[in-house]
Length: 135
Image 1 (cartoon, rainbow, N blue to C red):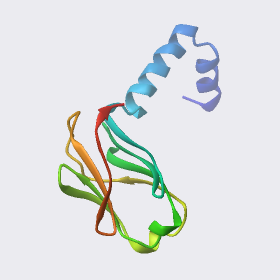
Image 2: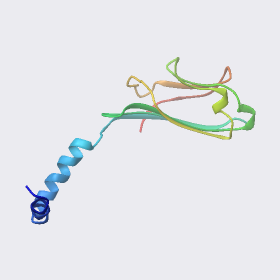
Image 3: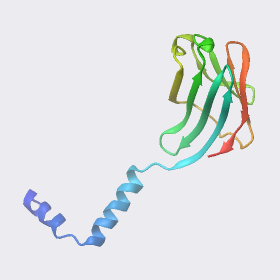
Image 4: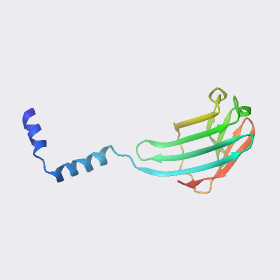
C-alpha cells in the first residue's frame, strides 16, 4: 500500500469509523483510577495545614500526594507520613525548607480502607492526624 492510498483511506473513512478508532485508542492507551483516598488537615494555629492523597491507577500503580503549608518553626525537620501506625513516606530535612511542601511520588501502597488513620509527625511530635475518606 502506498502512502497516497493510506491518506485516501483515512480521508474517505466514515464518521463512525473515527469513533471506533477513538475508542480503540482510549482502550489501549487510557488509564483507569482504581481507588483514591484523601485526608485533609485543617489550619492549626502556629503549625499550618495539609492534605495527603493516596491513589492507584491500573497502569501507573499507586502514588502518594502530599501538600503541606507549615509555619517556619517546622522547617528543616523530618516529616513522617504514617498510615495505621506504619511509615509510608518520609520527607527528609533537606526537602522541608520552605513554607509549602508539595510532593507527588509513586509509592508501593496496598489499598487502604475508608476510616484508616493517617498521622503526620514533624520531628518526633505528632502534628496532624485524621481519617481517610473516599475522594
